[in-house]
Picture (cartoon, rainbow, N blue to C red):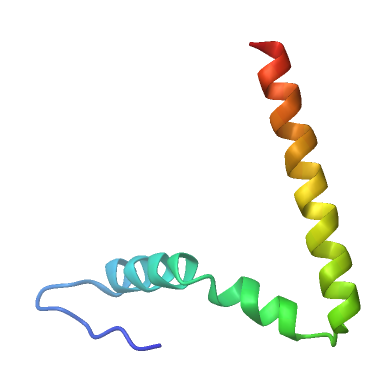
Length: 65
């Protein structure tokens, strides 16, 4: 990851721009996920749990409208 300083750009502005790129590219999220080993089966289980949670959330939103 590299962000070069522009002409007349303050350090604060540079840091703000850098942080925006880090958030946009989800670098910190990826780093946290890779800190611990998670087996393929656990990844699949978590994916199913998330999908089910999203389905329920969507159903609740549709029911309230």
